[in-house]
Image (cartoon, rainbow, N blue to C red; front, side, top):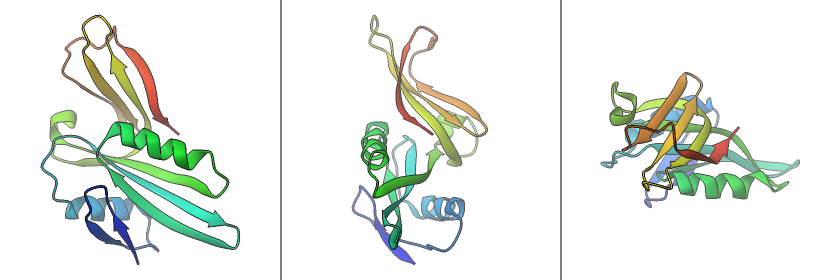
Length: 146
């Protein structure tokens, strides 16, 4: 078992010897979070061949997801195992907090109207989180991709 402090300053205990998806589900069930934005769970490792530690970061901001994955992707001593997204009911139109493995995340923007949103691709499909009705004219900027 190891401890995780998320971006809200909360301490979690996570079972290090179980599957990451089980850890993701267990962690999300314990989160007290009243905002309607997705939550990202980033499973990563750091160290070298002789001493590798597995860790988990929890963020609730797509820009912070981009910052973390960029930081962890270009170092020989850090690497990302998996990223999960917990999607709220307002995005999935289903039961609250669907947890899926994240394949890609993009920022969408319409420069003419200043409408913006996010596109999340998971193993089971794509989700658009935008206040704009028409997202087809929006430009896409990658925030994360496997």
